[in-house]
Length: 127
Image (tube, rainbow, N blue to C red; front, side, top):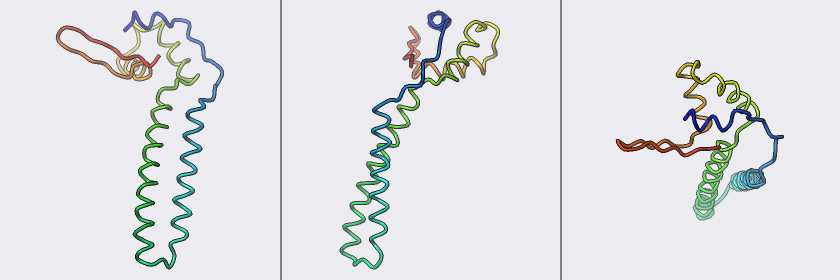
């Protein structure tokens, strides 16, 4: 891990860039939530038949909403903020002297998965 981190001894934060996919997902999430709200507002005094149709539509919209929330969370987890870059940079040069919790936090920022077997250890890097 120290070897991989040595590639990033001079980390710098890029200017905040807008992820178009994240923006699109947030817009779609707002639209889905707005549609759910409109459906709920129109249900006052609705008949049982209309309620059953509305429930089905709301369940469908809520499933889409949950999927969007998961996608947004995944995209947010992939991004490394300038604050995290600064945090990483301060720990890279001092890796041998930082405590276990700090090393774990660095690993959480830069690793998405670690697979270990008796024969080998492999890492899936976020960076």
